[in-house]
Image (tube, rainbow, N blue to C red):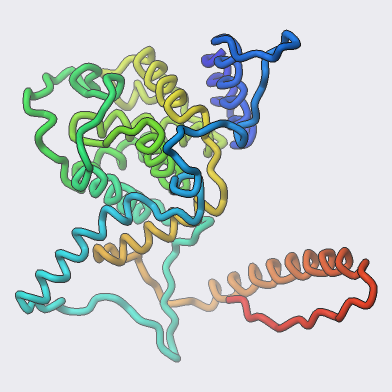
Amino acid sequence: KLSRARGACGGAAAGPERRADAYQVAGAAAEAESGDSDPGGGPHLQHISDREFPDDLALESNPSDHPRASTIFLSKSQTDVREKRKSNHINHVSPGQLTKKYSSCSTIFIDDSTVSQPNLRSTIKCVTLAIYYHIKNRDSDRSLDIFDEKSHPLTREEVPEDYYKHDPDHKHIYRFVRTLFSAAQLTAECAIVTLVYLERLLTYAEIDICPSNWKRIVLGAILLASKVWDDQAVWNVDYCQILKDITVEDMNEMERHFLELLQFNINVPASVYAKYYFDLRSLADDNNLSFLLEPLSKERAQKLEAISRLCEDKYKDLSKAAMRRSFSADNLVGIRRSNAILS
């Protein structure tokens, strides 16, 4: 059933919602086979929003599920950021030449990254930096055999005996992720969803991402995110063409374990996605990873104005519909609207 669900999710015509439903049905079917069935005889297909979480895992404290919970990677990075600022202050280190551009009355500088269309290169840099801080500031070395690179190597090269002792640097992680995204032609949104799934796995399974398992955990998160998010899904066998020495059976097994550890919860609310995007931008600012800024051209200004007008008309219609529903009360005082400038 899992393999059939994955096959359905890999089709080019299936959208993110249909793929998510397929995974959830697969999870319910797996529970039915294990004995969780309705007394009437049929399987009890529980909705994903009604699934029970572990006893000590509150929804409000899990950043991958709740929009108000702080992301794990941002909190782990703050220690290094504070130490760096303290060291620069004690040693009187000059910040050097300021390279950041600021808008003025005559020129407005904007970057080409938005929450709906992030810049691919900058997003991958931020996501890999978040993974770097996860590894560097991990609490311990809890892991599972399915993600251990010694037990399931990604290459035919012999894994060193001390492979679990050396933390990878940011450039090493970036090259690994960038290679996968370039070869599979994945989008920047997929990178953000990858980070959401990674933190959800660490929270649900109560494990740590460390030197011995980071490649397989990241690969599993990318594999799942690409199937759920992108319309042109990448099949498991395609990743075997990118990573020449891994087998499709190994990929299937890792995907199955990943889904089970996530309790088949692959839903990413829009509010959670937006929170991760803006936290990644905060991480970039803290670590001097600047997004490419360009002067606002006349053509782009006209395009932004057109988009703003469309949004204004859309929300104006929604507000009118909401007010019509509220006017059903007697003697209702009229609601005063205030003009807003969208830019």
